Length: 583
Image 1 (cartoon, rainbow, N blue to C red):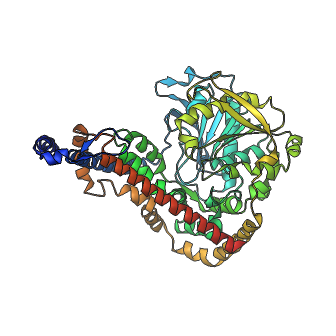
Image 2: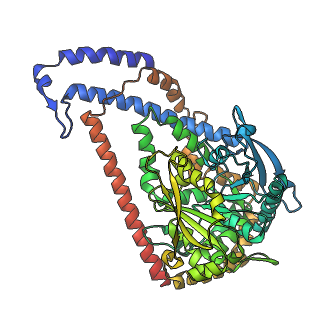
Image 3: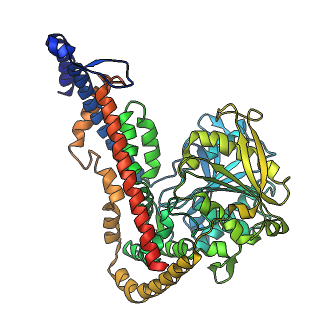
């Protein structure tokens, strides 16, 4: 039926074009700045055909995304690495179990490890964040951190985690597992300290590890990693205010209780999406819709990772929120892992590379860098400690672009890896890493681009904020957490069970908004699946200067601008409410 409709549309298009009246033929749409003059009936017909075809193909993409999500879930949510690997250690079998495992990257497709390994270079351990999604963002395509490290000759190891936490899993259990992984990699490379590559939330785990493993690890690379949780500006990262507006840790504790001891990572992913409603509600989807013939694979590849939501244990999420996001205890040297272990970032003696971006609204430079002056109040104190800290700033890339952008991987991450040997030659102090790339080619090699380390002062990267307000948030959070733990939590736990937790999981908006487009759950999508191949075969693209298409794109810009204006007003209101509550 769809084939006949498309064929008839083609046949009917020609006679209509020739049969239109002379008056209609003379009626034309002339768009300023566009040389082509379009006849109204012809332009409208071409646009309608193109719009209908794009609509069918877009719905088919959403259908395939839903099926990919369900298939990934059915397969157990394995890591989405675009490389071959073998499992070396499974921390679920340790004395203090944790849902982590150490993988060794053995190659990429037809290319084995022996094709590129340089035994003189330090091994690299890439650790992905547990921030709602599964592991793999550091290596889910060839142009990635894993791919660049392999390309530069490093032996690469990857720390993955499983969808479900071990029962009662704590931060101490995770750190013990990571330490075992570091020891195993060092043993395999004759004691050569590995380079630790921490992405986003994995950055603080890497710093905890480096502070506790002096001599076992080499340089530490922090990519978009927040360590100064109170720092920021109202137009940079409003998420830092969320703890104060929700009353603190108790809300995460409550959600974990409802989940029968597990905290659903879909809530964290939803927080990320809420940060930018213009992108979430419109831009991301319209980019695919407007470029339907070239965006399919890119969109589906990314969504395979984005729609895989993992769980954290109740103990992990409450300790993380209370100690880091609300308590800011890591920066202040007050964080305790257990009764016997506290963390002081001054114990980190490894050279540190910080990669952040001004376009990052989740971990802006404020949160990536402000811990440095908090730990080392002056440049003199930093030099006296014998520490070397290097930071690299991208002017515009977003948070996820730090990890998934191919151009960033081929330039910034390659430059970091190629410059690791230079870090040991730097004198103690603070440096800004500058990359000069006159070719503007992200796939170039030295000496086509050059790297210099320009000395900076610690005082230059200090971002002032009102710590008194966040101190009040911390106290309020501790008070609310005690009230909830004592009087409410026991009742919520008594009512929670595996069935109710599973029901909450599958009714979460982050999941329902995806899987309801699958024909397995939505019979109407079967018609889309049947029509999409024929639409692709008989695809008729409208010309880029068609005035109706130009109008569509202009309308899209206005919708995006309106949503962004809403975001700005919302963030301003959030800031105002926060100040009225805690100033």
